[in-house]
Image (cartoon, rainbow over all chains, first blue to last red; front, side, top):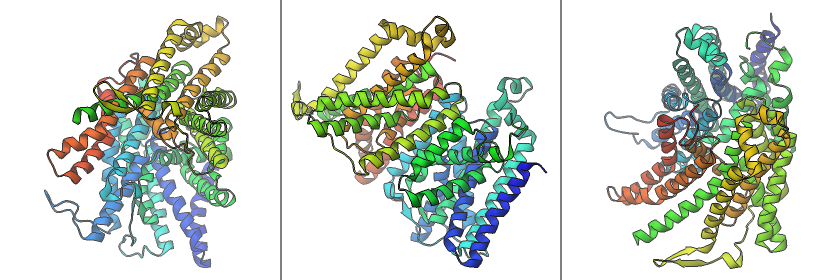
Amino acid sequence: MRRETIINAGLAAGLLAIPLWAHVTGEIFTITLATRVAILALAAVGLNLALGLGGLVSFGHAAYFGLGGYAMGILAFHAQTYDPIFTWPFVFEGTKQMLVIWAVALVASGLAAALIGMLTLHTSGAYFIMATLAFGQMFYYLFVSWPKYGGEDGMAIYVRNDFPGLNTLDPIQLFVICYALLMAGLFVSWRIARSPFGLALQAARQNAERVETVGIRPFRIRLAAFVISGMITGLAGALMADLNRFVGPTMFSWHTSGEIMVLVILGGVARLYGPVAGAALFVLLEHWLGGVSDYWLAFVGALLLLVVLFARGGLIGSLAGREVAHD
Amino acid sequence: MTTILFIEQVLNGLQFGVMLFLMAAGLTLVFGVMGLINLAHGALYMVGAFAAASVAAATGSFLLGLIASLAAAAMAGAIVEIVVIRRLYRRDHLDQVLATFALILIFSEGTRWLFGSFPLYLDIPEALSGPVTLPGGIDYPLYRLFIIAVGLAVAGFLFWLIARTRLGIRIRAGEADREMIAALGVDISKLYTLVFALGAALAGMAGALVGAIQSVEVGMGEPVLILAFVTIIIGGIGSIKGAFVGALLVGLIDTLGRTLLPIAFGTVMEASAATTVGSALASMLIYILMAGVLIARPQGLFGAAA
C-alpha cells in the first residue's frame, strides 16, 4: 500500500474511533468537535474538487455553504411557524425533515454555482478569484439586508431537524449522519478523480489548449465540476446549520470562503483526504489556541503563511511525500 | 426636496467613489506591475486609519494624523513586501491569495491585540467641520467636499506620475516587460518595493480620510477591499483610468441605489415592502453591474484585450 493510502485509512478510522470512544466515556464535547471536523471536511471536499482537480481558485465557496445553511434555516423557520414559504404556483411548506432539507440545499447551491460559474468561468487567474469573491459577498449583503430571515442577526432554529429512524438530538447519532455524508462526499470525489470526466478536468487544468484540440470544451467540464463542488459545500452548510441550530450571514462572509480554502491548503491540495486532515488540524488549533489566546487566528495566519511559503504539500504532502499522480 | 436629495446623494456617491479609487489604484498598480493579487490591501487601509487616529489623538492635529497614516501604511507596505510579498511574485495566484489572506489574519488580530476591540474615533478638524452652502441652497458637509477634492487631486497626481515622470516610465515599462527593464539596469526589486509602498500609502490615506466619518475599527478595510475588487473588474485590471471610472461608477450606483430604489419601489408597493425589496436589490446592484461587464467585456471597460 502507498503511504498516502495508509494515512487516509488512519484518518478515516481515527475520525470515527475518537467520537465513539468519547461516547463510551461520556465526553459529549469531543463528539461535537468531531462532528464539526466532519462537516468542515465535507465543505472542503467540495472546494477541493474545483480547486485541486480543476485548478479553479474559487474564493466564493461561502456562497454555497451559506445557501445550504439558509436552505435549512428557511425551511425549518417556516415549519416552526406553520407558515408556507409560498402558495403559488403550488403550496410549498417548511419542513423539519433533513432529507428534504438536504435536497433543497443541493438544488439551491447547485443553481447558484451554475449561475456564478457561467458568469465567471470565462475569466481566469486573478479575475476569476476576484469575481467569485465578489459574487460570494453579494449573497452576504443580500441576506444581511433581508429582515424576514433574521437580517444581520441570523436566526435560531430551536429544535434540530429529524432524520428517519435516528434521534438527531443524540450527539453520536448526529455525528454518524455527518460522518456518513463525509464518506459519501469523499467517495464521489474519488470516483470523479478517476473517471474520464475527472481526467479531462485535470487535463484542462494542466493544459486547456491541448484539451480543446482533442475535442473537449474545458468550459463545460469546468462548469460541471464547479456545480458539483458547490453542491457538496452546500450540503455541508446545511449540516453546519443543523449542528449549530443557527444560521447567520457570517456563513456567507468571505472569511468563511477563506477558511474553507485554508482547510484544503493545510491538508494538502488535490489530496483525497487533504480536506479531512486540514479540517481536523483547523478544529484542533481552534480548540487549543483558542484556549491559550484570544488572538489565535493570528497564529493560524502565521502557520498558513509558513505552509504557503515553505511546505506546499500541506499536512498530507509532508507526511506522505510528493505524489506522482498530480503534476 | 427631491433634487436637493439627489444632488446630495450624487456628492456622497462621488465622495465614496474617490475613496474607492484610492484603494483600487494601489491594487491595480500592484497587479499591473507585479502580477500580484493582494487581499491584504484592506489591512493597509486599516493601518492608515489606526495610525491617523492614534497620532491625531496624541497630538491633537488632524494634519499630523494624515501624514502619519501615509507614513505608517507605506512603511507597513514596504516591510510586508520585503518580508513576504517578494517571495510570491513567481508563485501562482492561489499561493498569493492564501499568503495575503494569512497576512489579513495577522494584521487584524495584531491590531486587535494592540488597540483592543473597541473602535477608535478620529475627529474632523475644526476648520473642515460643519456644512457649507453650495450654489442652489444645498447644505453639504465641508469635510466630504474636502475628501472629494483630495481624492481628485491624488488622482491627478497619479496620472501625472504615471504619464510624465521617470518613475512612471519605469512602472509602465515594468508592466510591459520586467526582464527587459531589469536588463537595462533598473533595480527591479527596489522598484517593486516602491510601487507596493505607494499603493499602501494610498490605501492608508483613504483609511485615514474615511476614518474621520466612520469609526476606526478592526476589519474596516474588508468591505472596501471587496468593492475595490468589483471596481477593478469593472474598470479592467492594471488600468489606472479603468480604476478611476470604475470607482466613480461603483460609488455613484451603490449610493444612489440605496436611496433611490426604496423610493422607486415605494411608488408601486406599500412602504415597508418597498424598503425591504429596494434595499435588498440595492445591495446587489453593483454586483449585477459587474456581472454585466463580465458578460459583455470580460477584460473590463479599460482592460487590454487578453
